[in-house]
Length: 133
Image (cartoon, rainbow, N blue to C red; front, side):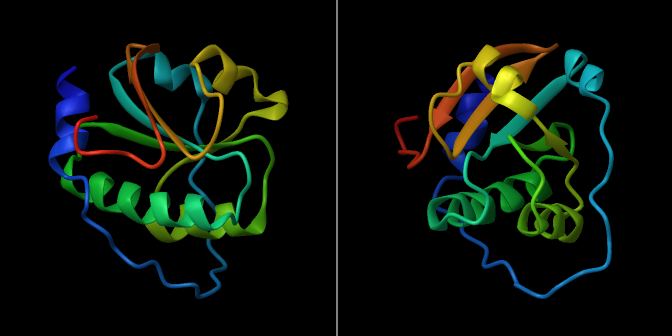
């Protein structure tokens, strides 16, 4: 619940992302890392979709404001758009082939924010987020 409150307190903050190309690659992440600590997982279904880009702007601001929380981008396939955004934001990116991890965390649509505590879903926010959430 505390993570939900943290997320709610900064809703409405938007940061426009540059669309410049980057040669950097996304930071690697071992999926087992999500089993320890607090994580905010931004789940995408359609990389490049306008709603995902808008939510990603919000997510990048949250990432900068709360360094004590692990942040992760999750997508069912690798795409250049997601890899570039991940590298530019310094966020790890994980391909969820077949959507198994997302399904286990309750992701039904995207974009979606899943809050994990020691690898277990502790809350979920479906886009568009509201102040009440």
